[in-house]
Image (cartoon, rainbow, N blue to C red; front, side):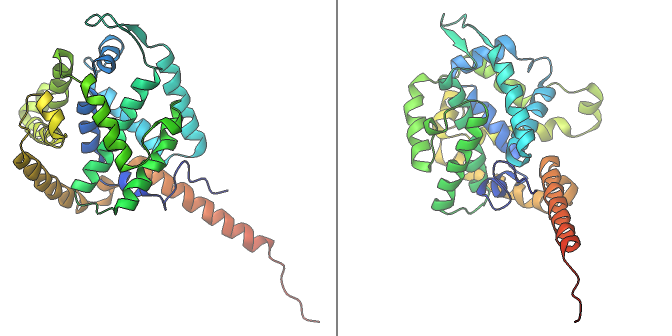
Length: 289
């Protein structure tokens, strides 16, 4: 039986999240998530992102890809693993004295909204071309992803207007304190082996694309980070993003198509093939009288 997972190939989610600029959207989401102090307290106290930033990025990308393109069983397993990890993350923020928990719906909703808004915004500014109706459909589809980690789907924005309202309501809670700035430095300048830095262009190339992720943040978030919040920055970032997207779309398929999408396409193709074989084997031959 064909199992398209949460969304399927006809969904707006597949169209958006199969785009090669999604890895850049993921960096933007991390920078946006970091300006919530309670969210950062949990990361600082319980995450290994400083010791193993590449591992953290890889695990996050694997989870996002699984939810978008995985089978129903794969999505359920990924959600169970995340919920199990979240159940163990709680503490007291040393800076504010407030308790926090990774199972707090308020914080889970923040992480979710930063991710899906970054996916959508990066795709659109890169030239994705979704209509307003399709944008709303994407946000509505993503309420299913919220449910995977235990968020009430009815509590997350399901349209562009609701998402804009959500961020306006959240802004009084947000600040780029020292923890957010340290996280941003790890995004911009993650540790790399010496031979990589000395013999390849990896360091300047990564800094350029991570800097572009920062430039793609909304103006209010850039100002929190003490980055330029001018409209000219928006224009320059959009031009750079579109140029990068065109280059990525021209790359060989093995670089453009991620492993989760490739596995999903193979899974659905195999299901179709088995269904066709079953139909043929079940057909009765005609006999002349």
